Image 1 (spheres, rainbow, N blue to C red):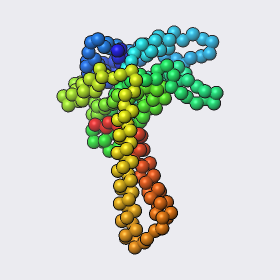
Image 2: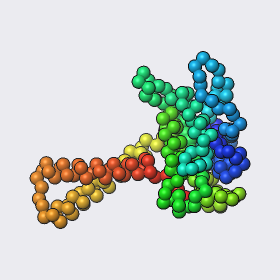
Image 3: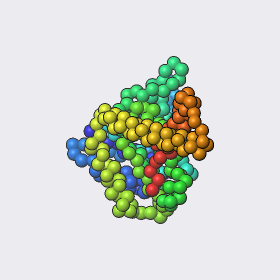
Image 4: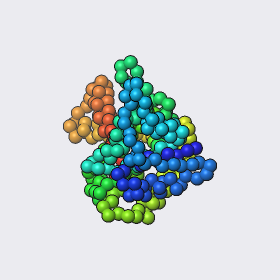
Length: 255
């Protein structure tokens, strides 16, 4: 298995590189790893009828790798420009377009990825405001559109003047890197996701029944079958929508 580190920072040997190196150090033989520094490439989008040797070279590396480790800092609350530019130029080759312009996973489907980012903001500032969330969401949106499977993510806060990663963060990144050696070519998380979904639905149903009972008791009301059913459905799906939104959109590593 081959692991490709993609460094999308303006500084080649800064905090982002420290994070990436820490993860890749856990890649053990016979697995191999390689790093590409995006600033070394003049990345431009494909223009019909014109050759694009830089993108051809990068696509060859992406195709050969089984796991991509995206390491990019968060600037002004969003993904670094060089990484965003890379994703923009990759768009035509990452997915397959149908006759209506819809996107579908293509040749990169079932590969795995890890996302790493960092910011100047402090741990609790990022935890409360989610400054780095936009970076993670962009990476997730792009790569899942291509059919890649997420292994995990990590963030380093308070990077102003930082020259060495805290021991706790090194342990977290090392643990994340160890997961690479266990990644399989196909998604083996299906059963786990079914259990998670079952648990979420079971908990939401319990909370719905509890809220419904408390409201009826407080209002001293007795509902018929259909009124009871409709109120249950409304409460249940409102809670389920909030929960799924939290787990799929909001919840990211923040400290």
